[in-house]
Amino acid sequence: MIVMTKDTMEIVREQDVVPFRNRVREFSTKIGMSVVNQTKLITAASELVRNMLKYANGGKVILEIISNNAKTGVRLTFADQGPGIPDLSLAMKDGYSTGRSLGLGLPGAKRLVNEFDLKSQPGQGTTVTVIHWKHGR
Amino acid sequence: MQNQLSDAGLRDDLMTNDELLRQSEEMLDALLRAIATGNFDDIYATEYETITDTLRDISITRARQGFSPRETAQYVLSLKKAVVEVLEQERSDDYITLYKESTSINTLLDNLSIVTFETFIKGREEVILRQTDEISEISTPVIRVWNGILALPIIGTLDSARTQVVMENLLQEIVNTGSNIAILDISGVPAVDSLVAQHLIKTVSATRLMGAECIISGIRAEIAQTIVHLGIDLSNIKTKATLASALQLAFSMTNVEVRRIDKNVGLRGTR
Amino acid sequence: MDRIPILKMGHFLLVTIQVDLYDRLALTLENDLISMVSQTGARGVLIDISAVSIVDSFMGRILGNIASMSRIMDAETVVVGMQPAVAITLVELGLTLQGVYTALNVEKGMELLNSKMDTNLEQEEDEEDQDDRND
Image (tube, rainbow over all chains, first blue to last red; front, side, top):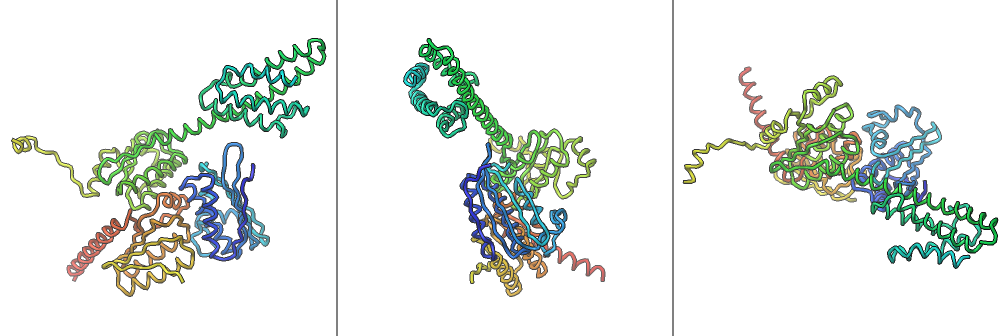
């Protein structure tokens, strides 16, 4: 896996969401991702960044264009130092929310991207990594 | 030795076109420079970068043009014969050096030919991938059957990649034609399991989000049976046994009436 | 502060969202729209999202809220002009905007609202008839 472009963005306020989404769009346009796949990735990114703001008062996101032998894609790593998630399988369940939302954030984001990895230690923060390939598979 | 090597190398390139000739010259130059470093083993070292790159280019182009693997590999392997011939002339007096040098040049060229193989196969795989995409495009035509009514016959299995293509084509066509109703005909779908049903439900939901209604038609008896046995809930979706009855439903939804015209009356009218 | 303009057209209110909404703007829109419905006694709300490229679950919830709140005040909500990519993404996300009507464009949305008003009127009349009979 080769990293071709890399950028880091700090997300601390709600106003950072729109510029962040535009940056994700820039990255996915750069590798020629189709509109539908772009929309899926940006929506997933939007859900994850919102979670980060809501539950951990923000954090940082690493944006990367990656390439393995056959495929090019965008990888986003959301890292926060919030309270962490005590029960991962519960958090991944549709409709489950501790924050009076629709409870679609994490499971929905997972359905929208090709690869999804969630790591969390209660008290130490949460890291979510997602990859979406150019052709969406 | 270097000069003769390039002479020898050029000889088997005489038959090819100008562009390839230039490419080969460049490659031979690079090869000579690389050999001059004394590295005969590691073709992934920096001095071989130009060579492997050029080889990859050539193999990819040839794979796309439909050359056979034999013809592609020949490009490198033909060099072997030429080089060994030159070596024989040069070292005719010293068999031990001849043996050593020809072994190392053989290994080197074998390694390089493996690069062409790998790239050739990769090129072919790309062709296959592209064709898969094309097939899924071709196999999902969206037909405008009436003003404001689209039909989409699905033939073959519906997996998630295909569903995505179906949805994209259908929704885009709904926007382009301003259609209110889409008929999804699944007569050509061999079997409906819970996954396929889920894909169908997704397509219907997406159509509704756009503001159009979706009817599923072509549900055969055995498909109806499996749907019920699997406990799949399609009660929110309008379903019809045939495309004809789906079209009829679409007509009534858009307040269109199709009537048989009494021929005699028509003929009398024209006279 | 930025605000999204709300136009009054007969019995209906029309909102065209031209920018990517950030949260505060969306919440302001929700407030403005609901107070406009109560002020004008509008019977329908049309929200044109044809220029919106991303609808996430937050945005989806705002649209749902507007629809539910308007319904309590006897106004139907129609979301019009959703982009195909947005529709596909929402379905994958698991958000089907229950209780929100949709239409292809503003014109069709108007038609839908008009037909809803007609059927509502008919239903009311029917109910009145039944009430009469029951007495």
